[in-house]
Image (tube, rainbow, N blue to C red; front, side):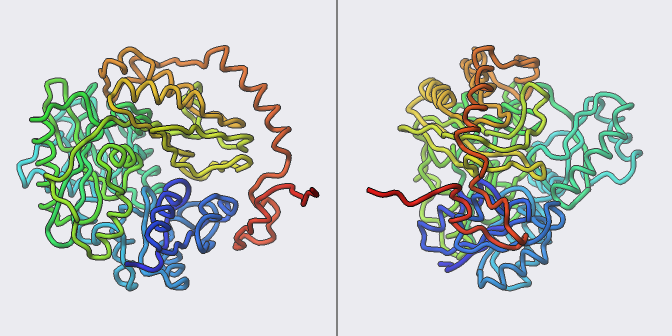
Length: 499
């Protein structure tokens, strides 16, 4: 097994990989921009290397700097996490050429499935149903207009080389088209270093159902069942669960077999997700392959009992999967809520600032994958995800109620978060009944406001700020951007006490 790996990411996903590596006896190297000097992933890794200023293109998307950091620290492999370079075939190729193992599919498979348009072509070649749309990235406005003349509005402009809802915009009329294309290109370039976009028909009120897959280098491939990710804002998932109430055993089997067909057709290895849209008539359409570890992977881990990060590392090392499809089953129900630094009362706009106090819920069946601490300053430079709250219970209703209680015990003061909003989503009678779809928030909670009782938390936040003190745990006063904080710089005020 690897002795040391570099994690080319930041925040909670880097900490998730660090925890798995510790259990496997693998040393870890973190990378960080100057804005992340005080980040928890920097403190928790065995080593940390500064790679540049805050803009992602100069740090977390800078392939030469990341590869160089891996070589300088003696890392044997690079885990890309999710987002940033995780689906970039040029990054995988640079790792291969540099004698490093990329923890994911090889560059050829990644070029095929990581590009959403290329994966659509593969699906068609293998008789997998897809949503009507472009089969090549659009270069000129006329190309988009030609496709629209065949499929009609509304359409969805999407980034070709990434996911997570970035670079995605609905267009309902010709007057919106040019602006949507240009905006998608800018967002895609910033998030993934690739500004190519394409277009497909926009389905009204579908369910978003994805299948987790694992494939080794010896021809073995399995799926670990589905996740429903229909609760979304700005085309980005915020609540995920498994199993999906929309699937019976026959539909689950057919969708799972289709996911494996896509994996085998592309020569895909390691962990990935095959995504589908499910319409009101229970017809499913291939959407894309997310060629990486998903943000929502913990719900699968809770229900299936497989550590997906460890599986990624074992497959990358060359080991054979230790289980077959018939060995896998679902037990109980799991729900994940994503906690972002954003304001649900203001269009979910980012809410950077200093976290005055954070206290995460605990208890049976509760897991919190987090990258924050009291005193951390959340910057405006990156995706605003702070943590993920995951709960498990024997059935969906028990799980729903446990999540509501856990959200009620999640204290995060100083910045706006959607914790109260998420609790109201789970309390909504349509969610309780399992009638979810990708337009759920727009349809049922378009003008959500925090209750007056919860507004009183502002006063608590001010008190907490005084209690926490003016000095954060992060290294506010470091002399140089490339200095990693020591434990003494992150403790805040302390003193030795007498007996």
